[in-house]
Length: 559
Image 1: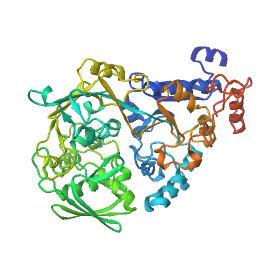
Image 2: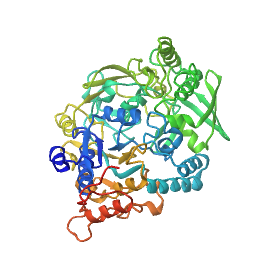
Image 3: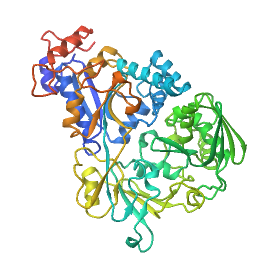
Image 4: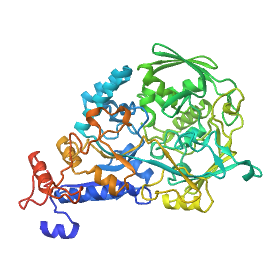
């Protein structure tokens, strides 16, 4: 019967089977190629695999909100500061929906060192981060694979200043110098993106639609903004620390796009709302599915007057200041939206209720650009907000010099490049796939930026078989990072066993050709192919860790 079953489905009725979620080829050619390589190696050791490509928002919905997955392969936005590890892996967030611990990972040792890195600074903090990374490398809630090179193509005949700031952030589109001879009237910059999510949903809290990109920060100001790995005051005129308390003084006469003034009360509301999106109306809190770790650092916010706040933190200032990067939301819009929904009987279920998923709330912020118009899966158009504080003569910050930013949606990197070559666009706002970029085509310039994102395999450790550490470790040993970087990324990535930028990686976790706790089951007898799997050695390892094979030794039996 098993043989008939295998002929029909490719798997015996009692064979262990798993599903790998990933992105389709048009969305991410590298992710699905990694999935296929892992599928090949899992099949070789006797595990049946089904690959399910999902569109980006659908994949994130399944993983972040529904937690309905075995494992997935994608890139993670990461962060320029390693405190994002706290949100990503601390056990307190395991029951929640959102970017916070979607793996359901629980480890008290990890919790302790992640908390310690939040309360220390300097070398002590770096040591704590190193301990956390070491423990993660041993326990494998995820398998980091590589950090991709971040590359974009730009036209330099109409705008200058492309290299001044990271083009994955809002600052990349501020301070650009247009060539006035090319524009008779309004200055319009046309960009191309390969993810339609921002054209379909601009709710800053909608986790499935928010990955990385400049869109939310173009619309919404934050107290401070990241610039080349450093924080600088933005909506705040000044930030003064006294122990664990920061006094924030906002710039005067700032307004939201609808003309309402920005006040300390809006800032206070924002942090309280992120902590509980039901605003205390219901029993139990309903934290936002984004910015969870940042908001968790804030213990209290007091509005002293219209422009002054005192913010008390439960962390060091080194970590606490990261909370200044959340988008400041207009209280008069969001408080009303919450109250209307609760009055109509909505249940504020954490991470999934309407207030954090809907696209019906007006995307009105106080940022340098306001939403003008959009067509789902086609384009999104922003207009310069003339009253923005960066346009003031005495403010020394990059300012919007482009009247309109138009982001056009294309299905993939190749189509995006074609738009630039045809003269229809000025920049590929999305980072380009490794398969498309070699030397820049004639008339275009390649802009390379530091990457914080990393490709990885994420495991749902709530359920068997990935609840078993030994199973996760053996699966991790089926990954040959060097082969993937060479063949899938065309060498345009760096193998990595940690999910952080290189300055935070301890010496013993630096890539030296092998993962320290889960080296690839390499076939040492085959010198011609670095990615050749030693199938028998891998099978013996699975057996040694308690996984039973069928009588012929072909496949792992489902327990």
